[in-house]
Length: 213
Image (cartoon, rainbow, N blue to C red; front, side, top):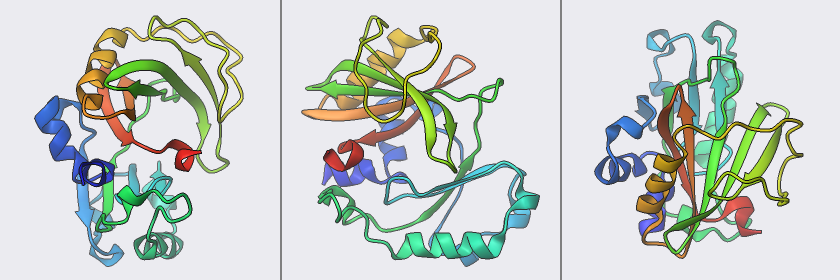
């Protein structure tokens, strides 16, 4: 049950608030049960639409004026009808009531947001997977794996390696402390964090990366 709660991208927010504080949450603009409830005229020019009950169901809107609402509705309606997790038997997703979330769009000033995925075992961070250069439409990007001292490892998984050395995050020690707090109860969990102008933001708790493969 706790994994179902934390895999829910809406309900996990309350748990994060209790564990580490509201300041680590990406601002939530709205939460909806149906697409028809969304008043797009009241939304900012840029935002992110996502499903709370699944992985990979995201639409990044950088310019609202260019958003095709009819096509977006088709996609979101399909999300809401999807019972996520059966392909990989990720049973913690099964009992999450589907909702539509709209969050603030975040981006580094240079246009490249790094995603720090901290793999934790028995409450202790062991490996930091850093992903960047992402094109969400083409599902491309680059990655590198570091140990907790920010030494590059030879491990490879999803994306090709960066063609450059990545700077050690200025808040690395704090990020690892947060990962320890959030992963304390679990044999394994991946704690996803962002670092935006030296401010740490929570991404998600992932118990079965790549469906557990």
